[in-house]
Amino acid sequence: MGEQRTALFLLLIICIAVISVLEIGIVKAESKTIVVPDEYSTIQEAINAANEGDTIFVKKGIYHEETLEISKPLSLLGEDAKETEIYFVPPLVDKQILGATIKVRSTALSINADEVTISDFTFNSKEYVPTYDMVALSANGNRIEIIDNIMRKDFNLNLKGDQLRVIDNSVASGLQVYGSNQTIAGNLINGLSSHGSFSRIMENTANGSLNLYGAFNLVVSNSFSTMYLEYADSNTISNNSLSCLWIGRWGHECSNNTVSNNRLTGPGPWGILMAAGSYNVFHNNLISNYTGSSDGYGLAIGGRSYVAEHNTFYCNTLMNNNWNVGTNWEILGAGNYWDNGEVGNYWDDYTGTDSNGDGIGDVPHIVEGCKWDSAADGYVEFVFGQDNYPLMEPIIIPEFPSWLIVPLFLIVTLSGVIIRKKFRVVRESST
Picture 1 (cartoon, rainbow, N blue to C red):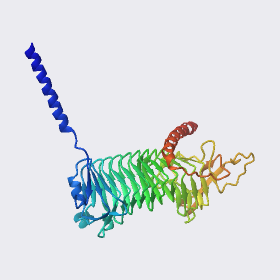
Picture 2: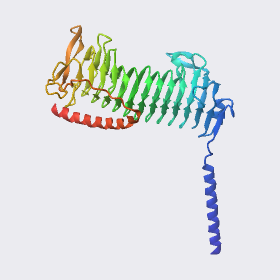
Picture 3: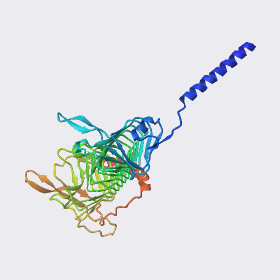
């Protein structure tokens, strides 16, 4: 009996020892900080020497690298964005364009790993890069962060992955993002293309356009020249400044979006082009000064064989446009609504009165505009419907502080769902 107890005791000790060895073997080494140029003369050498989770800190200075490649989780941090500059000279590689082989520059900075942070650098190119070869920073991974960087002339960002954070960068060229649950905020960019859902696009300024694909995105407090929606549903677009919003571009239908509190200002052919899609809600938008062409529509509806129906417009201000509503193409679908059953829009061409002083006109406003008529070989006046509760005064568009953006998103999204369901039941039951 004593021998059995001794054997069991020894077996227990052996098991504990084996478990301890296994645990020691799987414990990761503590992350460390590598300093460039103190420990390594080049940034790529430091990247190669780093372990997963390490930080590479690059002191102020000018660094010359052909390319940089990151294939493990790590942080690459500059001491100061304006004084920590990397000049890239990517080697030439062959590329097929329209059946011809040409020489182009390879990617300057490539990331193929999750949980990589790039922060506080200026990226530059020592040599001219042709416009057809603008992809300079390419990333493929989740939870990548690109923060507080300055990217000069030829630097275009092409990022793929989920939960990316692209914040407070200055990018001379464009930004393309593919994936969901992104945060793209506070950037100065030439243009943005976002493909994915559940992302937050906030407080960016762009000289070019924003192309949005996907669902349940929040687009708030940005400044773009033009915003295009394609195959984009259930998004919240609010408090932006732009010259044109094109929904359902090229007939790619977009539905159940909420567009509110935006400032659309001409001149230009149109402010909002509701080309293709249904059950979108537009409210509290300022649409003005579309006088720069013979068209000059505040709102344009439909497209070539495109269906735009069951969209609702209320509490919008339309003023100083050549035409408040119009189209260059045919009108297809069951029609759109110019009030929400209680309030309508402000039209600067409404001539009715308000005898009881409730701020709503006594008689409906016939929503007239123009459309191209091939038989008449010109534009003809066209009735788009009527606003039963036209407003007597313009709506003031409020500014929303940053800390209200996410609560606003939740409120607007929820209210938009309720409004659309209500409209569907009321409108469809009446037809």
